Image (tube, rainbow, N blue to C red; front, side, top):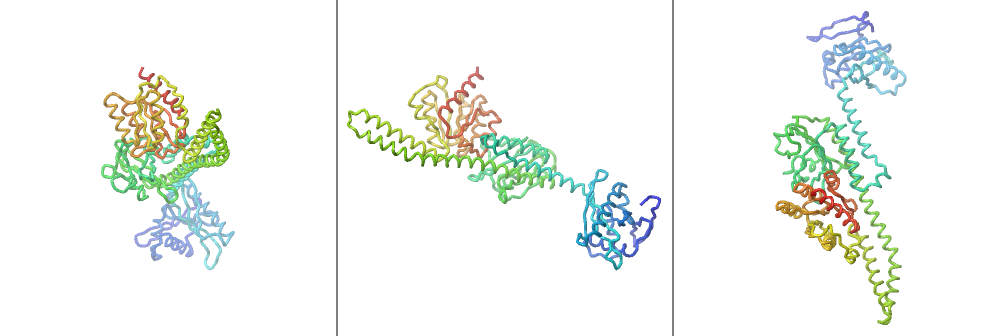
Length: 542
């Protein structure tokens, strides 16, 4: 439609005026089609004489397009669009008309989208048929500004792609990493995705410990962690917004933090927050909490994006947990198989040893038989103990028998915390033999209290050795309490085959952990790491 050929006709219906543009006035079929289109799109039972008024309330414009691509009528809204937009609008209608004419099976309403003048547009089209004929003679179409919708879709697509990358684990690479290394690799991806596709700068991910219902910190960026001994639980009352979201599974937008009594400190000067559940299928396993120093910073678009990314994060964490569980189960299966295979030859050796032992008292084989019986019993006990659970200290008995001492340990004050009495006592005995002054605890809370008391009297421990999972406090809290009162004190954490439900090792490794040991470990390995830690401490103190 050229500008020179434009004609305008004005029709007055009450106080409403609309325009007809094109080479010819609208015929009755076109007028009826517009009226029906307006009524249908408004979903309102309005009389025909009010249909034209409704047309002005639809999207960014309404028009009628002939098969040639000529816009024979448009309302005010469409007439204000750019020439490029009107051309693309007409092109979409021509494509729809051709589709209707080619096939009767084509849907009565078609949609198309395009980008023009920096705006994403959607066109909704219905066929215009001649009076008493099924022949499609044009299209009645609605123009909608879909920029916000497209922006949201693009954002969701980016989140979806980031989520797919979170779940992409190279099996061989992952198997070569221990649990903390796997979590560090995942953390890098999660933090990057949260910052880039969600645009969050200050956030934290917490997982629910199913034993205690505590919301344990996993990943954190820009927020101040809770203090030692401060805890959040997956409970509706007294545990902030995070506890409520973890309990109900419903996201919460808090536009004005100062006015919300449920808020627990995170970002200094926080004014608004967004908290969404981490869902593994239909089960809530944790939360994602984001904060901002601006009022009303987050909206429903942020909520949708955070919920989607949160599902991917939950799935990726679950995969890592399964890999750790698989490693533990593989270890148990292997040792059980070894125990079964070794049972027959061990019993035969024991039988022969008993035969030697029953010889006359003066015979030299009697002493050999006794040693064989003792050694077979020890081998059997070691295999059975290792097969029962992936934990323990190996080689302690032999080390204690040898009695070798290293001067670097003499007089050193060392704290040992582990709720497993056997491990705690074994480590205690070996260190004590080395000349150390050992203080042991079966829980983290008392260990932390003593660490603080000793620091207050200027007699801090030279080394702290702690299990990762204990009652009252986890390994990270023991580590953090130690570093808070005396940064020079090294810390060694122990865990059973990388099982680290609180992700203590990942967090403490980033903040100066000396090392971590996977149970069962050789006592020589513990002493070597303790030796290195004490040497480094002595070097720092001069």
